[in-house]
Image (cartoon, rainbow, N blue to C red; front, top):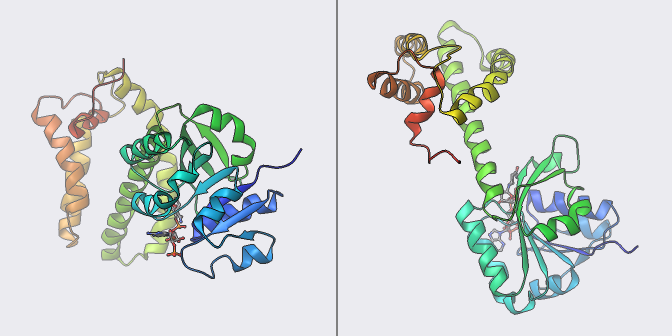
Length: 292
Ligand code: FVH
């Protein structure tokens, strides 16, 4: 059976990796990029160079956009909107959930099917173990193209709300950014005793790997809204964090990162929840109501 013809719009570091994965699996692959020259290796390997976005759109059964942001997706697709009717757009550009929903509505208004994706991988990971792409939007698009999309990494579908995958993507990114800020804070602290950030990095990686295993158990309490069976209560956690703050101050380290954690705890302790689970600091984040 003939393989799906894929068009990749946007050949930055990620777009090139995506196009290479489709091409290497034998898919007829057409590529387009705003700036010329980024497609040279792909074309040498067998990809078709499209001179215009319209040519690229016409060449593909599956249109994959991997551009800088929401605005650049519109910059590229708006001029060819009339060409999109009956076609399928899989947008792997990072957009917020509301932007993804707006793009889905925009695509529908032009007669196109839309699936949104969040890539949980760096370009070098594409097509390898450890690469995951989160999808939401048109279920029939995911079902039809599941095998092709799985060339990029494990493909996980979250339902027809086009913003769902993006919400999970950015939730995971938030966890990562805050965790790395914590590592930078710790590395700044231990510099006071002469430890290198690299040495500390090995220790932090091992420590965090062990500690993060508790996340699903904390999450179960958060989901129930039941903080009455603490592994570690807020008063105990507050004592620990206050000591970290004091040690940081003594070392002359900026308190913004650890101070934010202390604030989350202090608000719950001040409200009388000191003997509740440390997971109650989640409630300081003004979370939306629990799903029923
Ligand atoms: N790289 C990564 O590790 C991450 C992993 C998670 C997901 N992201 C998202 O993927 C999108 C693309 O990322 P990228 O790494 O390919 O980004 P760049 O190398 O900066 O390439 C950007 C491409 O977008 C084109 N572009 C930008 N603005 C416009 C525009 N107004 N009109 C047309 N094309 C535009 C740019 O073209 P050019 O500068 O070469 O002409 C590149 O092709 C992104 O959403 C990440 O968040 C990657």
